[in-house]
Length: 348
Image 1 (cartoon, rainbow, N blue to C red):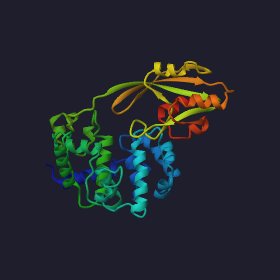
Image 2 (image 1 turned 30 degrees about the vertical axis):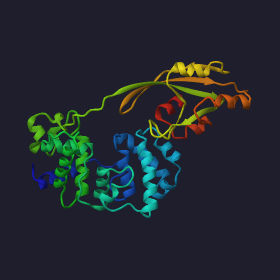
Image 3 (image 1 turned 120 degrees about the horizontal axis):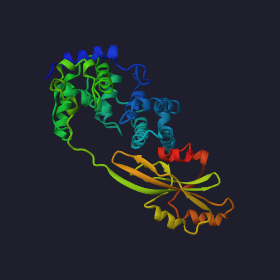
Image 4 (image 1 turned 120 degrees about the vertical axis):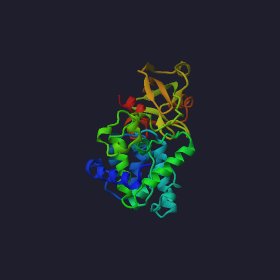
């Protein structure tokens, strides 16, 4: 294995000259801001996160503001960012830190990792960036850089191999400048040592990189267990009366848990059977194709416009046949926590 000081010093030198600059969450030691950026950047591109991060801080400038906010407000600002369990854990974590730690994040990675939604790598990033702890992170970018540089061919689908890579990563962390070194590894993985077509010619580790010497960097990291994608198809009912529509809050656990959405039905036929004999008129809208982590989802929306003049008794009888929800004015609905495809549909 290459000596730790050599790798660390190369990464630090490269970062000073070529690392990413000007990102809104850089150059801060505020654990709240670092934590927020780390959670948002999980499985989400920097270009997408930048605007969300700014808007989120405008609405929730500190931990107390986030902890005191209704979950619906948090989900509304998160709408479109995906992986909504992150938003729910973010809110819960803020409340735990406020309640159990006096509003102050713990100062070490071990304690941070016990908080809701903060895994080992995120905890290490906060500890390294904010408290200078000498601790390794192992997010997707860093796994790729280190497994290639070290020629680590252990199958990371196996816990024992992942633990071994953690140990090697920890050995490489320098005694000083753990934060800049960590940021350098992340930048390297995001800009040069990418999953496909890595730019080895400009990489500061190229001459000691085992994967580069083998001529097969794309073979690392090794992970045999791949997700099998499935498919699902459902129907959505956009039930409207004037500017009002019927929204339901999706259950937890499940896809889009806690968000507000249109009532969902197993099949278009099931939806049509419900609507048989209803007053008003309807139309099928173009199907929505939505890709999630585990499956591709086809959603067939059907818009049904109820008559403006309908007795309260009749309206209540119709509503009682739907999943529990409430009538919401369209402008208000667009300010709620909606799944991105549903928001796009309602906006037209």
